[in-house]
Length: 227
Image: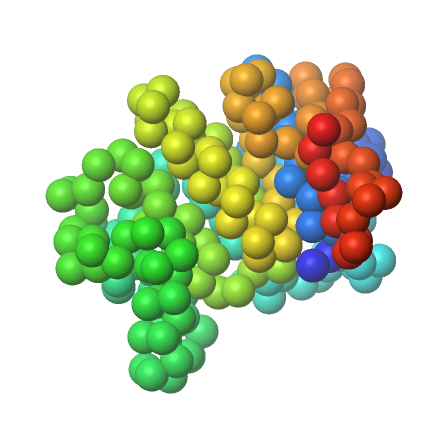
């Protein structure tokens, strides 16, 4: 999974933003409404115009279409298709990308099991709880095997109990799949629980960085542990 670097990014929010996200880390970006958090995700995904350079593993993606950046995006409003059942929602991106029927079915089954929602595969979004919708939306974002995962305030609509449960699951899955992930939130407790690093933003600028990521001297394999 790639390192991501933003160099001198300028648009309607940023005025020369420079930033790096490390390979396989879960970076949390925190800040108030209007700080530029969602615009940061949209810049990485190529959904907004900008001047400057975005690099994945040192290679510029400025002229690379969103659909070719290998990015999975979980939007704040989830944007599940109401006319499709859970399995079809999860597999939508695979169908659009031309995945064969057997391959798509296998991938959907794998993701339903990963997210522990196999029993929901025939339900429609209107019949799901908030936490269930969250799991379906995350499974759909992962279906296209992204190298980068963008999460835009994914837990804001959940009650406290469901939120804590889903946060633990997302953290576990992110580490298992080793996906470079950027999560934005305005919740400090959530940021401290989830992040390998926390970047605080305000008015389109980085105001503070907290680093929880350290190499484990006693590990037999290369990894990062939050201590």
